Structure formats: structure tokens, C-alpha cells
Image (cartoon, rainbow, N blue to C red; front, side):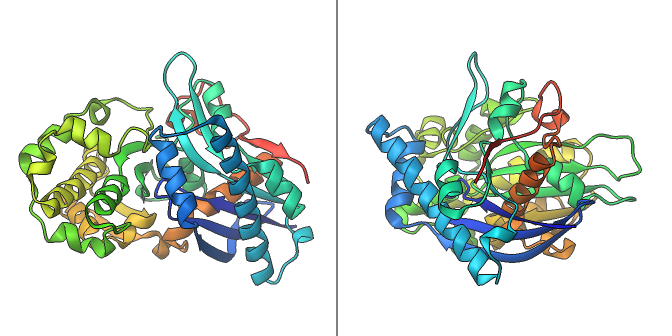
Length: 371
């Protein structure tokens, strides 16, 4: 029997909502039926940026935005379903990641907070909604991230050859996939900044939300002293399991780690930030001995030509492709993953990989909000 699920993802780039209508067979074989990208209203992006860096005026503002995002996610879902020629009654569940506003998986009382009220989504759409995926893994002692490696393992593993999946969103993460016939385990973690510092610096200096094709960074020159200072941050040498977010890697972090940033040419800073992203992605791939294998990119960073060229220079022995070659649009891998994770939850199957997140055991992810 075929099951239809919707996956919703709005990542740390804060630019849009990605929505996927996914058909999943009982054996787990997937087919993307339809996709939709809906930009955030400007006022929402601005509120979220302020919230992530701790500029929350009140609890009322947080709760109000939680509800408003739920309404927006619901509208996007109904738009996707309508444009796909389906009805709400044909959709078994929605997997909504929500918008991360704070991710703190370490410490005495760890947590990860995503907003976009799933009760509102379920009520408006009339579709059962699975949300709050990360906190059950955290409750089991894990990082709550990254969650995509379980999906990558199911969809992208090859019987005879290892592969690397690199997701470059606001934050970058890697999944190291051994060949299926191997006894090695899947590993993965957040490597550090993906697009977040590049986007923030571009917005700060030029009023432009992102550096299209990496043209601006390509026009600059890497400042080695700045790069050395940034890469010395403890996060990059920290052993996995580990995860991070834009509440850590932001312009405040940049200025704290290199106070002389304003003395450099703006384009040189951008070039250095691009090199930081490429370097911090490549380093663990090389360290784990995966640098002579196929590497597949997904996420918004796949469109940054300067960044992908820097990656290729660092990983010269590897063949680097987009996940398009494996049959999945690189812009919608994450949304597809959360549709798949919702299916896992509805089937009462675990969705985390403890070897990746550090959880004590596999867990069924998310809360189920019945229609």
C-alpha cells in the first residue's frame, strides 16, 4: 500500500519553507511526488534572526510567532497538496521540523526548541502532524542532531562503495556512509558553519541576504591570520557526537574570535568565511579516510560555486556531485527526510542513529498531533 506524507523544513538560513509530498511504499521505497518552496515574509525572517541571537522582547513574542509560523506552515501544506492534485484526506501525516530558535544539547538541562505550532498545523489542515523530532533523542542522552543520517543511510547507501553526504544549510553536517556490505557503522555530525556566516556578513555589509554563486567571496582574498583564529575554536576539534547552531556561529562569534575583522576588506572577510566553511567540512572527511570516495552535496550551499570549488580543492581525490545524481533534488533533501521520519514515527519505528547523536538507544522521534 502507498502512503503519502508531507515534509516541511525551514532551516537556519531563514529564507523559506521547503515542502515535499512524498509517496512511501510499505517497504520504505520513496518517490517525491511534488515540491514547493515558499519564501518567508520579511517580517518573519527578521523576527527569527533576532530571536536566534537572543533578542527576544518577551515570552508573548515567542508564543505569538510560534502560532503564526504554524499558520504559515499549514497554508504551505495546503498549497502543496492542492497544486499536486491531491486532497488532505489522502495524506497520512505531516512531518514538520519547525524553525529552530535555540539548540542547546549540552549541559545539565539540555534542550532544542523548534517553533511552528503543530497543533495549529493539524487543526488547519485536518492532517495528523508529527513534530518536535529532536527532543526525544536529547531525552535519551543524545544531541538531537543531526537526524538526517538515518535517512541518508536508508536512501543513499550503496552495496559496494562508501559515500559521503554533505548537507550545507546554515549549519553544515556530514554523513559518512560505509558500503552496505561493510560492518562499519554510519557516522555523522555538524561540522560547523555552512552558509550562516556568509549570509550574515553579506546582509550586514551589503544588505543582500546571500552571496549569489559565491561571486563576492570569489572576489576576495583569504586572510590566513583570520582563518587560523577562527578554526582554532574548540568546536572544530571537539570529538563527536556533536551538533551546533546559529545561536553559536553568528557575527557575535566572528567578532569575538577575530576582533580585527572590521580592519579587513569586506570581500576578504567573505572569502575567509567561505574558506572556513570548506575547510571545516573537508577536515573530518579527510581525517576519517573518506576523501577518496564519492561525495554528494545537498542544501543551499550546493548553489555556491565558489564554496563548492573550495571544497573540491580540499578534497581533490574525491568525486563531488549533487544529490541530484542520486535522484533527489538537493534543495529538498531535508524536507524529504522529515516526511520520511514522520513515516517512521507513524509506523512506530526508531528514527535516530545512536552512533551519530550519542543517544543511549534508538527512539521513536517526535510528538504526534492527531487531526
